[in-house]
Image (cartoon, rainbow, N blue to C red; front, side):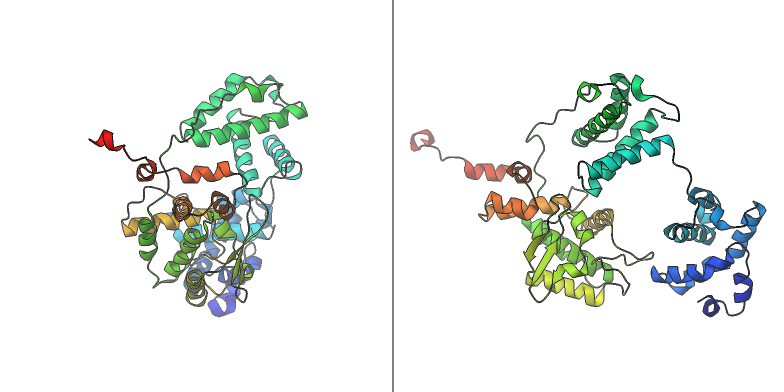
Length: 406
């Protein structure tokens, strides 16, 4: 591949002592991630300069570096040397995926959090996304407590935990803080069973009060949902992809994580069915493939999806290519909301899920059927989606008696 890109200087680039053995595979890897030839050439051209920097630091083999040590060779201001920064970050991802970079010894905090995550997966059977939230909260707590080798958490007091909660509460709302407190209690119970923390700490932490029905409905008028879908331009690959994603959410009430997890094998074209993986219930949901959804998916697969060796349904259009993440679905929703100038005050497509629930309720669908479609285990979870608007309450009011009208 390098010989095609640099027929004149191929021999000089390959002969680089530190980077030369990896550059040809790096080019193949970049091509598989959807990069065009020009940005690849511009990366390879700065390889001799990066080689010189490595040699000046006494680096004889790039595999003796950790990921953070390799990233330290990137310019502090990426705009000042764009392709040097691009080469360093591409190398870090490429070598990291192949396990060629040195792995630093885990810190005591990392060892403790790793044992906790293993406990959540094997003993409690939590989903990977839930474990990731617990991992982040546990790591943040240990960082706040400045947990180091030899430190003892057995002297931990509720006041320190309250200080941490107060700090976290400055950047998140009460509902999110409730989840953080629940994750803290779980981590403290784990420490308690290991003898690393005092007994009773989980019960000494208070949780913020959130009252049922205190928030306004998060659903949109169905006319706004329709206008949002119509505002998505389907003349580009990104537009075709995003229209198919949000039509799936508006039709089936899927979560962003479920959209990102969809694979080509989940669409059964002959049977006109779509199989949705439910990360919370761990059981797939089989739904009928509607004509509108099938048409949108076919348009995307034929004219918008990159021809890359990924089985995930929705892929990035711009390099680096690969499966979409749930955060990318939310960012796409925000982008189309701004372009369409629609009265949507929410930052994520979860409001489409709420809107579908209310829309189905007004059409006479039972609460149980709505809950099954949304993947809820209890009716209480479904009721959160069905907060009534003022107009709905007016429809439920009784008529005034004739005498009162007079």
